[in-house]
Length: 192
Ligand code: ADP
Image (tube, rainbow, N blue to C red):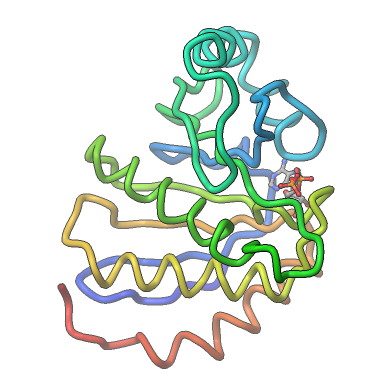
């Protein structure tokens, strides 16, 4: 694990592993707009969390239809070691000029805001959009790191620990490399 100090006793942690096995207050899922379940991290979350999560999503679907890209909905976490799952819809990557960076950034901000609204202390994110949605890993990782650090510095809320979880050693190395580069600009910054 690699840790960036975000000031004011807040940490951005980089963890390699299966997000369904890591205890936090809220686990973020990389969902699709239909909230219908899929493969990748979404499949792992539903199979480890049990059917209750999908039942809640069906009720949300009835109410709102689809979840817009860049946004998220909350459910309880079923059997997962968490209180909530935030189902965020990342952008499908085409050429990067269709608003993908802003939409990906929005996923991280919206979920952090949702954690703060619920006065949660810890939240974990998978590498949203970098699986079947095809977002280049280094670009997505840079957005994730900058968005989370910027948010932590701009908020005096309950959120103390943010875990960016990478599934596989290659992804983990890439995130840590970027974190080392971008971290220096933030380490020791005045607390908000
Ligand atoms: P998307 O459709 O947003 O691209 P994917 O689930 O296909 O979502 O992939 C997003 C990321 O989640 C990928 O980097 C993938 O390696 C990772 N991933 C898959 N399973 C897990 C898991 N159990 N824990 C953490 N990350 C996972």
